[in-house]
Length: 503
Ligand code: NAD
Image (cartoon, rainbow, N blue to C red; front, side, top):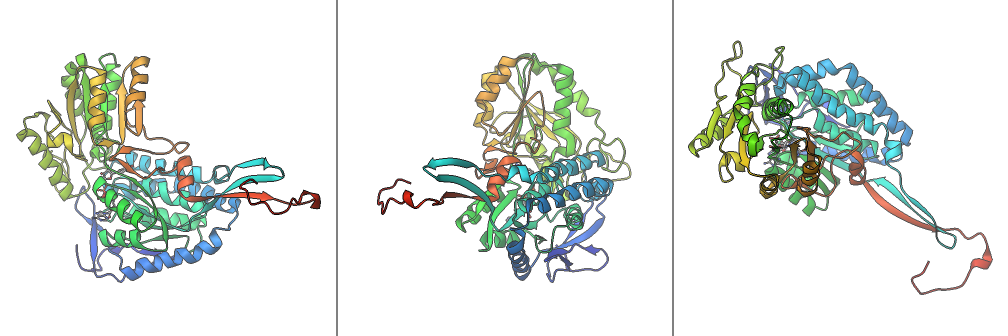
């Protein structure tokens, strides 16, 4: 945390269509994790600024909710085009502040862009139902109406994709929005917000406040906010769910993970090892869908040396350097945390097959780098198994059978993603049926659903019924109103007063 300084750009708030400088006295540096260069300063917005953003969104809702579907859809058609045209710039900002490689940064933007494309199809998504003649001359139909002001709170690891999970669908369904991006890397989010305004999102319909705990609590408590979408850790998400629900809001929280990949001995070895290494160490393991845990069943346990050899070939470097596989983790604190986990793993008796601590990265000696790290002999009860590490650390467990692997996964508190590697359709179907996890991949290491479907999760990975994007989020961001109507066109239908419950 630092006092206001003028050397670097200050990240602005967006209130009522204007990018404004916060009056806060609390600011934080946005730091390039590969170099420690300060890129900008981000404010922790004041309570008045949060109120002003919500008030602007509330005013804008009065007209925005009545905007025709076509007008809303065309904004998102334009928006997806602008994101495509600015892809290289967006990825460069993202890599500078978040650390992931440039191709992976483009992937981050692209997975959000897919949701924007989906929002452009809102006319086909926000449809009610109608039943003709539910009684004589009576029809019943539903309206899916926007809720009002909705808010979104996002994590650092996908600063493009996750904000784009939220505000395009909320706005396309007729709501107005207050976004609270991660304070660690808000710059690409702000560039995306600028492009949204350029695409035609009217003033007050999208607002942005920055900050941490206080701003998040203000959002949870605010009487004029009707729904809150959160993506981040289980600890914070549980707090947001409880606090915002108590204040009467709809809440959806997508939270932490410990994703298990199960490898059966009949799997295609080459493809499986490549998939595992990519899914464990890509984005330096800072994906909620990272395959951070592998369960090797039976003879697949003999593949450990080959897995380690493959991980050893990955290139650790700054995200802007061509050919980089693993960039830095987000902050010095994150690097220390992950190194702490590695130390604990050694102390607790796991076998450190590959130690990525303190890699040499020429030209980036100050970066928050940790190379691929692999532990074998890991068991429940060890901290490296029980907690989400969120770094480039893969822990290997063994199981004697598919059923034992399923039991292990279902006993873990988290239920975000999982994958099975096998050539057996029967095993795959058994896994799909028995596993209690939201995203299930069969020979697909990171099965993040495209926006025709919704992201989901079980147990400690999700609170709230409905997930982000896809059909579910249309239900989340709308109130179903059920209308039953009768029109009298013939006086003879009048049958007098009826005090029974029939139509
Ligand atoms: P985080 O929980 O620390 O932060 C998320 C948001 O909450 C940020 O906007 C932050 O400012 C705010 N926040 C932080 N501390 C707070 C507090 N004490 N009170 C109120 N608000 C607070 O998460 P992160 O470190 O930014 O992101 C990594 C986590 O997000 C991992 O656990 C990862 O698994 C999870 N994640 C989950 C999904 C999913 O879809 N399930 C997707 C991406 C990330």
